[in-house]
Length: 120
Image (cartoon, rainbow, N blue to C red):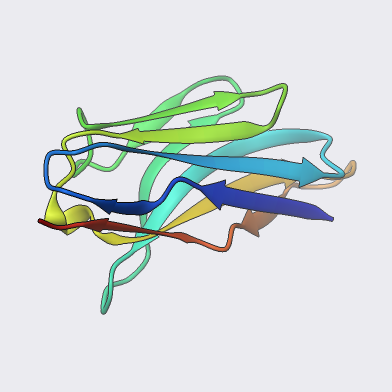
């Protein structure tokens, strides 16, 4: 089994910064991709940023230039540095990972979510 453990959420004022982390543990052969999603009240879950094992990244237009995703392939840990936060960034942020646990296709895992609230 694989577990994703998130940390780093909280309350921050507009313009502030937060850093989220997600650590994957368990029977991991390798990681195909890790990403952060978020879900605000009354809205659908949306992709915020992704990073592949090769290091390639992509971002939602709404966070480009403000958020940075990074990873440690050895420790299977991912971070999301969030700067210049806006009230509209308020949401529950979920870690997602596509992990190879055996010789077959990768398995999709989700973290439990961490609340980010941007408010004065």
